[in-house]
Image 1 (cartoon, one colour):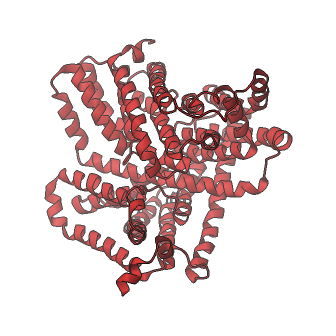
Image 2: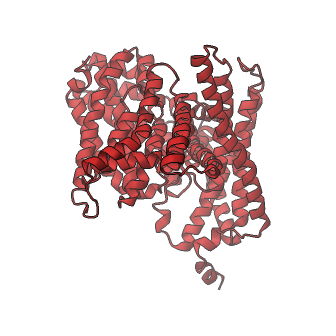
Image 3: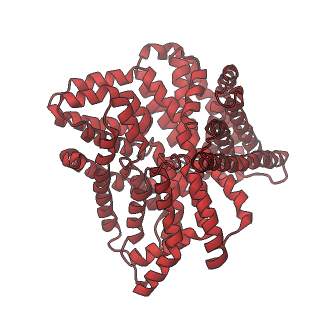
Length: 631
């Protein structure tokens, strides 16, 4: 009888909140205490960085403490944003398998995902406290305060996420399913813990067990990506090495708090702002008047827009966040499938990895000694080649699109739309001009965009044209920015920890030695490099992989007769494909988070785009002139 009753319980009933329960009241109260400070932190970052630009460029009196204060607040923003995302269940997860399960099994797997995330948070809580305590002995150079003010964000954010996980379990509607989920996760952790004596002697076989087996199982079981990566890395370090687990927290800190990533939340907010003010509507209306009557027209616009804005922020997630909110609403209104949109967005992220000014290009130049100017020159044309291959696929997929309901714009309508959109269209050029002329750094430039969008959007679009400026939406937009940014940054943090674990295993030296002895000269070396860096890009991202393998492999490329700039383009594009390839590519989940699309929806369409990218990469590899013809 009990079994029959259990099978009739739906997934929604198992995990739905009980509105008047104490747990629901506590969760709502705690959410307010987290969301408001997170919104204030986004505002503070905008003010601090813009003040730094004005003081340095306008007043010629730089604020020496601005970057340091921004870095301190940024880690708090990332962790509080991650907590907001956890409370709202907006951490990215793969639901392709879970969504096809029966209701009771789906409810069980949802609670298993919560329990797995809670397990990681509890396991990492003490090392995070230890890390913060150790940082208390360090004094910051500019502000002359203890670094614990910054590092305390890690245990605080972890504690808040753990509280939200416990409250979610307390609000679940069926105690039996909760207990079964808790016992399942506890049993798996216990098995691994007891197997520790057998795991240590296995050596690098543990890399497959944890970074492929455990991480892959977590991803497909619906565990949020960040926590799946975290559990795999924690298990590897705790059970197979003697590394202090505090080091893992340090690597997560390093991955999440790189100052260039501060442009991610700021560009996310910029995207929301231009959408709210009506600037996005004006740009889309103009672009639609030009290409809207062409089959797949706005998809071509997306490819071109990513090429134009790429490299402005130095972070691919920020580039996508600047483009997607402008184009996605109109593309969806025209019938485009969300999964196809996010798949193309991810593909364009990989396509534009070589476009200067790119942080990956700068990193390659700094660690290998290759001329950064040569890399900047060589990076432009490979991106065009990949844009062409993507556009060919867009043409093929949308060659039968029904455009009978779309009216071709007249010349006067195009001119009028251009006049309305001109202040909005000027925004990317204002941003790029500010970077090129040295007015602002890649991190600070997003604040110039925000101030420009706020003034122009308020005065021109908000008051005169659309009258769409709504002050009441600003606070929800700030909270949404923190939430989305926290979800993205936590994935980057745990992926950085995974990259560090791979480094310590000696995997990089083994790979370099294997590639040195390849038969077949430069052709086989390039082919193996494409395969290797595609795989590495999916787990290491661009910069960590370059730092690890660049100094080892670029001398080999020179020895077998491959031009350094040509090899750099091949490596970057291969890593870009891996970075945006599911199921492990972090960039893919960032694109899904920015596009607010379930990762499962983009799985099928993205493979076609990845194939188009691979064709473009092969063309770049076969014809070195594409990379070095203009040097």
